Image 1: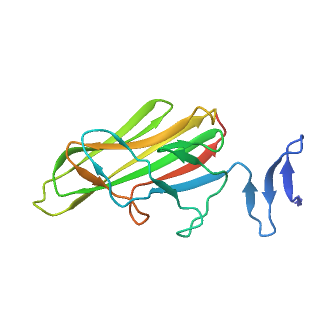
Image 2: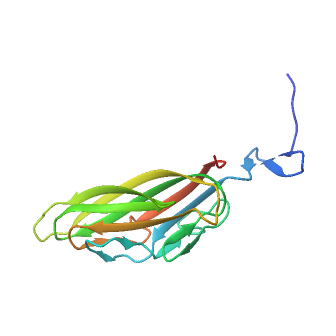
Image 3: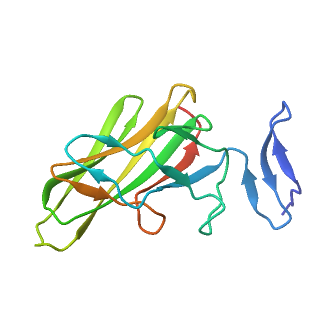
Length: 179
């Protein structure tokens, strides 16, 4: 049995790829995780697509800290901090007192729209809640041209819920180098 003792593993050009801390944790330089939530608690959406443009990053709050580079968001359009294959988990949260035969939550990446649907049943005058969840994988080969945005629509007026506790949110996780 042999023991290999190292503090970091580097590429031959000197770039640090992995670091091993004194607790035995391996720190990989390309890991990234970022969590965002819709800022405003409600926003009325009808039959027209509405881009969600009020996002707040949960970094350094709610027991979470971002790993890796920072996303930028402008008018609801997210720019990735680095190239790579990104897993994007989105949860849209809605409520209404009116029934709607469809509620849509969609993400647009590289001009490709992926939409998930649900509905709100008639429950008299009581408020009814519903969610739409979606996972998509994005191959980001250029951070200047590959962006993602999120939008909602409905057959009737609904409220898109925000705020950290149970509201509309998105989590970005870099899982591999760009392909």
